[in-house]
Length: 107
Image (cartoon, rainbow, N blue to C red; front, side, top):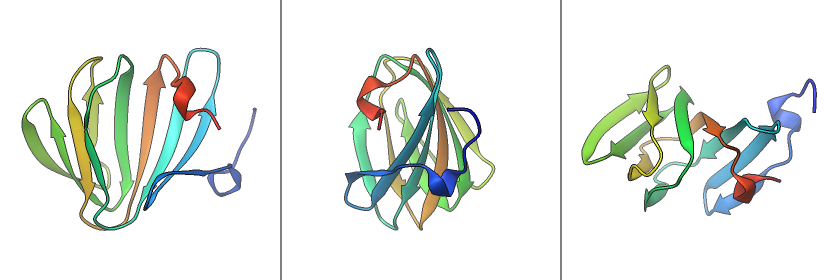
């Protein structure tokens, strides 16, 4: 893929109000996720390692029973198998890093 610009990346609507863009190599992936206000990603777990970094906006994030408000500049690490969920309190943009890549997120 080489160089890329976020606004030129293909996007897909994962659910109403949630747009996803992705870039990947063989073993590493990032996603840029744009949330509209009041979008809720239900509780789930997956076998991937994930690091989420809030670029803009505010999210209510729940990880393994603990809830925090995450704002621009805040991040969270999510080990494989840990249940987590998120709700946007305002429009938000989040950068996620994944290992291994999520084949189901490839565009």
